[in-house]
Image (tube, rainbow over all chains, first blue to last red; front, top):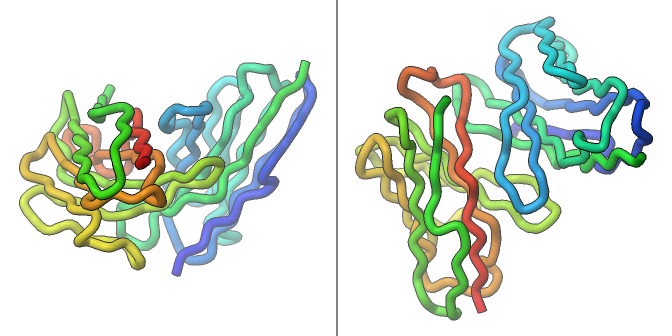
Length: 111
Length: 117
């Protein structure tokens, strides 16, 4: 059974600082996703990582994938308050297209 | 981009009644739709995978007779919560994949918040 673990579960950081969220998964997968969720809202797609070594960047967020280590990271650079949200990673097991989600990381960026 | 809608966005019902939630792909044909449930401050849990014209595949622990899923067309899937009870209160989110957008990305609906009194 595929398990997806995120850490930290909660992150409070000051504006301007950098930090990394980690996503580990337990079985082979070639597809990893990062989503953002604002309170009371649905999911917004951030990144889709499809191969080992993939790196994608959008604004202050950068995601990477190491399929050998079964690890993805979401790096936040010079955080701003607007980035406050819950971030989820999700993995598709094997050839399936269903998503198994991590527990989420609740990010709070303080002024 | 791909747009997925859900209706209703919010529903309150009495215990014992049934509630139907619709998920529509507005600008593409969704070969596969997924239904998730999210309890407050928790992650999303996949309930079932729905392919157009065939029976849904339910995840372990999800009662198929309680959560009826119908995917009658390439743009519409419905989830019916039968004989709802307070413990079914949750945020239900659908997603869709397929069409010209490929199968690597799921597009999520805005969610339906169900409250069972």
